[in-house]
Amino acid sequence: KLFKIKEKIGYTKRQLTQESVEKLEQEIKICSSVVNQDWLMTNLSRLVF
Image (cartoon, rainbow, N blue to C red):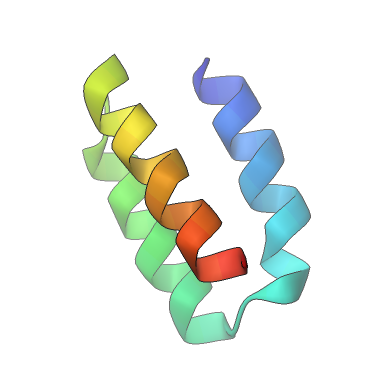
């Protein structure tokens, strides 16, 4: 599951500002449980769209 998140981050990096990318990368390091991963994907979608 973490691989899919990293794949999604890699795809969306081009659409985000450098500051947002750095913030997301910090959150990814913190997020290890499935619940936190779901939270991250939700917030990632919020940033992208």
